[in-house]
Picture 1 (cartoon, rainbow, N blue to C red):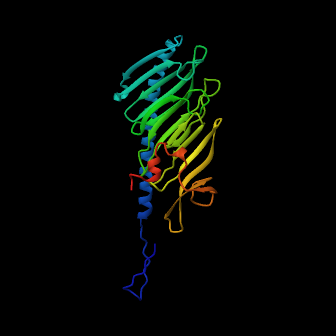
Picture 2 (picture 1 turned 180 degrees about the horizontal axis):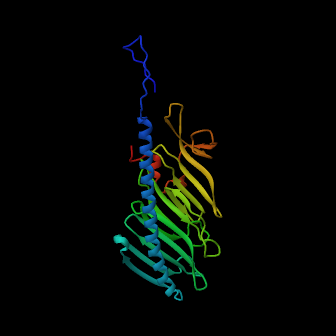
Length: 282
């Protein structure tokens, strides 16, 4: 870096100065700290994974010792690396009378781990593995969700962040072989109607300002039937009418099916309906 001295106009001096790019140094330092933090997190995750896997392997060993039984239950607590873990082992005909399934739950301070195995010829085969933050976990249930006469597995939880109604359900459908399960389906604020093969629910949004949805099971797929929202004029004021559309009513993807004078009766008893109307939240 060459500097010109303003105080000596008749004489030019060339001075070599060794400088440090402080901005680049700061960036390099932050990047180094970020990588170090990431490494520490990955190491901790790996340690946690190994610890929890060891707990699972012990539980599986106990289950295998009782595999010839139609039903078996064992609950106990362990303290690996000074971290308390509650273990629950249940072998039963949870989902159908044809085939037993093994459910192993591991509850640690930060998360709930649920693993489901189908019982085969002297062995257990994992068919579901679900992890849920302890702070969001509500419960898990076994029930027929899609109306095919088979019990499914559902994990219910409530979002830890966000402004609005956010009750979630993760659904694993029991397949027709009565052993394996589908991939995970996640619904927000759902009300399930197995008799109709329908899911109705309330979308994420402020009370009185969001939509309701209606889905239908189609095997291991879900078809969108319609969305319900309040009609608004050009000034954003509700007109008192209700819009039935193909999608949520923002952007250009939705198409209006019809406009009604009131909300269809089928939606009025679903969980979160008051949130949709805004009654009691205004």
